[in-house]
Image 1: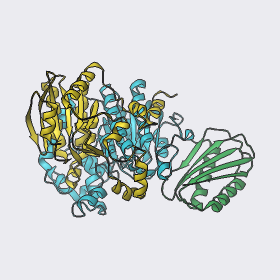
Image 2: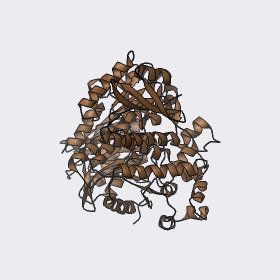
Image 3: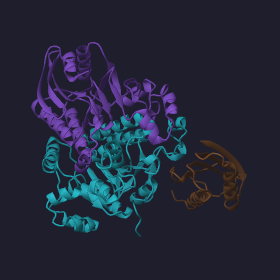
Image 4: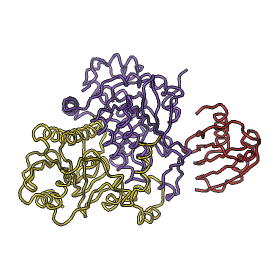
Length: 104
Length: 294
Length: 237
């Protein structure tokens, strides 16, 4: 397993709520946990991945997410079993949409 | 709108069966109570260790509910996963919900923590049966992609009421295990039709291993669970004697059976092939007078 | 050890078989003046539907005929029977039925004990020995889910890695010592088995049986999280 950590600027997320979890830890898939932090202008991401050597791609996926969505003040933690960037992006969007809509 | 139960995640299943706004999870994923053993084997963990446990209402009635996530290590039982389930069952002895609902989706014991998993499964069985003696009702539900095998196949049959879809599978040893040990001539695990005939919901329903056959639809599962909450709960010598008679009858009549077709024909089904193709509703109706039950 | 040797050592003051089934046996032994119902399997048999059914019948009959008599499971099994026929008939249902019969006996104040005198593997052990109030094994017995080479193949984790880890972790590798450390086995037995059995029985007559294995596993350092996790779900807000 490889652990990666990124901290990227992002617009502040206005919703405050309990943690949100989407996705599952299965082959080609990942789970994404979103939680509130106090750093309003930052998105902090921690990734535990079974696929080694993809730090640059992870950085780009997280940066892209932080630019497009209001992820400031959110902690993202991911357990990954080799999800493609497209699947990770999908999960990130699902997670923040659940966060913003108030769904569990 | 129809939403498949088979493909749904554990959390989606819970969302689909529990009354909106009533759900409360115990040890939610944000607490990160993950397996302490998987990292030593360089394996990924899940924030909920592959099982969601909590309390909610179903049709207005209080229930405790657990859902196994079949896509995380095949829903297999490890130390944390098993302990969450045991804790939920023990909680029911104190809080007396209408029932404990178990959404099962598991290949059995998690090999990465084999001893802990096996012991945990035995603790789950003991906890369920002890709670049943004390009047707690258990509703088991099978319809996920991993089916319900190994020790969890025993756990399922420790419940008061068992619900299953045609697509669900229930057994002890998975076909792959039998094929690996005994050869393809004993059990061809790639013959999907055969696997479904042996382990699938229709066969289990007909021989009396399952109480309700349900369409692969989350809303239908919800409705079936609500009906199961009304079913009487019993744990008595008389009940076990009736179950024993059914199992003894099955053994004496079908010890030589080689395929589910032999058993279905033996139970008096005139056209086995037609029966196999029926919808759940038709099948339930057509089997009313031939189905075995305790 | 053979079934006969085991019975001789457990019941030096006398025992009598009175039932047989495929690779299985049952009878009554005397321990400190008390009659014990023993039910067992031998020859490392695979437990199938017929054997589970036979054992369930023996348990139900004990409940009906001998109020509060202790039941001792004696085990030498390599697991559940791996046959399509047994799956077709619903082996899991037969096993669960046996477990339910054992629970009924427990509820009616029959102390339930089990002793692994040979092998005990997964499914053959779950519905019998693992349902006991107190589980024991001989020091030269074997308890396992799966041997390490098979486990390595299925999990795709290198065998050397598993072997190395198993020196420090009781969690996945075979062995009665691991099952004791994890709290499943009350004790590992050798030497004077009759005295061990008498002691085990007297202890069980004193206290109401509850499943203490998680707490024991934590005390012994073999299962460090289960107890606390279960407690938190049981009592948490």
